[in-house]
Length: 235
Length: 235
Image (cartoon, rainbow over all chains, first blue to last red; front, side):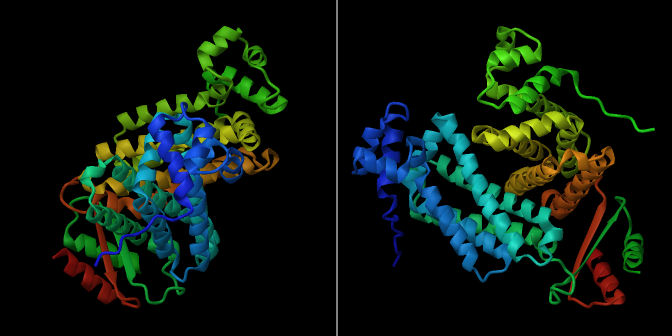
């Protein structure tokens, strides 16, 4: 039996507001309209969500908190923890397709919202960097590698998310959503694989890791030349 | 003899405007003040720079064009081309320290400018991705690796740039600037090294590239075992 993931209850009012904004147009919708759609008074709406722009990103705030909580508690090694956190964000979008699509539609129409999305994205990236610097062995010497890995993970997440958001809903059965999630998991795992030696080091702090020999030669080098170069590199 | 790099003439008026904004405060400075500082009439200023916010990022537009031109013409293999392009941007900031620092000061004070900087940054990232997808062998299958590498390169550039901008000018002799540039070059080269196998693949599609041999063995393997494994890999 397939269990259908449910929308988080706290997203209800924000989801209704975002849906209305996408339907009526951002500029054509007043805060009174949004408060109505969210089923609350204008003052409650302001207190709860702040501005019209803020409500569009209300669930991002919640997910960002979830991400930082998850990272604070994780027992996973650092690269895997970042994979896990990025999937948490992605799966939130998959579980709330109407709201994510409505928000995407709004961003296409309103440049200021697109910029705000970039800022939000940057906050995830920052949370990833802070986690890596907290948990990596010799974090100080790997600062820029941590920065690079965090940015790369967020960029891959965003690229797959945009592809999913651009795909017409009719083409997306629930199985396709699961495939997309699995594809992101694969891409993130590959990325971790690329970065793992640089992030975790291969010194005595990771005694079980394999020895890696990388030798670069001029194109067309024959087997003897290559073996000689590798031998030299090991001396 | 040390040759002192010179500021690009086209930056003069924008640099004067940015300097005044940082000195007087963003909100306290009118477009008339800026036109005065830039040595032009209000209408010329508007035609040339657009809004008060636009002038803060005027040189970014020019550098972005330089980056896309350089990438269009480059003969470097894709990862090295990205290293080169990121250094071009960095060295522009090093050559214009007062303007870059004044802009950084403004961004600390005005959140909207900070957001705009993120957007600018994202445009460099996009230019890098497009170049990689244009030049990589089997680009289609490496799309997310290209996205990851571009984001990582930009993030490392930005992290080193911010560190340089936060350092008090008094501590930065010209030699220190050169060191910072060399440090970025090293970090970018390391990043290219991390990504190169995933970006370029190791198949026959890149006949002119150097032969790269990557051999993975159990930890503690001795020289003979490693040479045997490399030899086997080449058979």
